[in-house]
Length: 460
Image 1 (cartoon, helix red, strand yellow):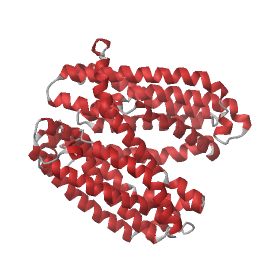
Image 2 (image 1 turned 30 degrees about the vertical axis):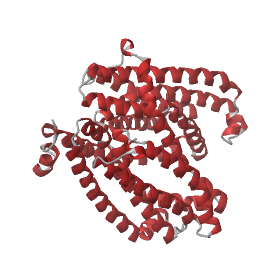
Image 3 (image 1 turned 60 degrees about the horizontal axis):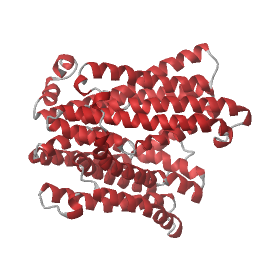
Image 4 (image 1 turned 120 degrees about the vertical axis):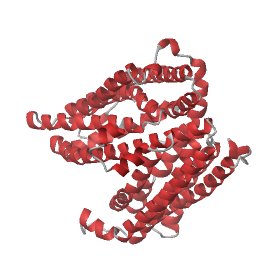
């Protein structure tokens, strides 16, 4: 298929690379290639969307929108891990050729999340009239009614999207993450087009913005779900007769562990802004975030590369294709080495890039850039082993590491940043030390599992 579409666009050696080799590897390579293209387009869309949206409603209202949407976005964690549970169980069922079981998992997950969302909707409809969103968002009091309506719109569309986006879990579990990336891109593109039209035809309105940014992703997911479940994924389409709540334990047993890991990691990596703001002031948060976003290109690249491998590792593990796993891990380690070299080059030119990007007014200390370099390199290494362990469902040790890390990070950050006087670099240094410990343990666990010598906690 790829030859048909790309033979006139790409050199022959690239087409050959993308279409030759193990079927599992070919699928991964093609999805990585398409994901990079789609993500590049998505980044371009976001670069246009942010200033366009600010121009449409003004910076203050845009800040209100970001705060509100991020608060409601936290509810994404209330799938209690069912999404990741479905991802693994669906991939396992496909690897075993159990298509009906795969459909049961899909149908049951849709049913459970629909019930959860209906409960949340009822609760929100009951309490929203009593919430003072102007105070919650620190907005002018005369916006209270407008913000209450906006919150309702955003929450309703979020809930619908919460269920509909399961189609992206299914396609990713089938080693087609590029499709999920395409859905996100199309939602952003449609939003950009409609906001541009509104900018030319209406005055800035938060309600219109909420309707646009809420409805467009839902529209894309709804149309895509109908298309996929009536064509390529028809045999996995959710249906009431395939809903079996007895399978919820299988989904939730693994999913709940993923949920706890997600929460712990969120605390681990999202607490830095709060700690820095409290210890050193909001201006230092800006310095930290500039360095974080600059080096953030590394985890973005690594994440795109790794995305197809989660379910590919599941498939290979179920089929006992250990040699493919070893070969893939070797290639991923080589890519990590190249990415580490790129990170060091970025470090060497960091001050020059900062000056071009944000000007001379904001100074980012060299030690912050150095610590951030180690931060992204070590986490890229961890990602390789996390995706393998996630794919085969051996996450008990990872769960313990995540909980301990979440508990230790804040006191360690305070110790390095304040007591030892390392400043904002000390906050990141704490996370780096924790990541190094996790890297050692996860690497050891992988070696034991792949060599069939894992026992106890190492094999759970």
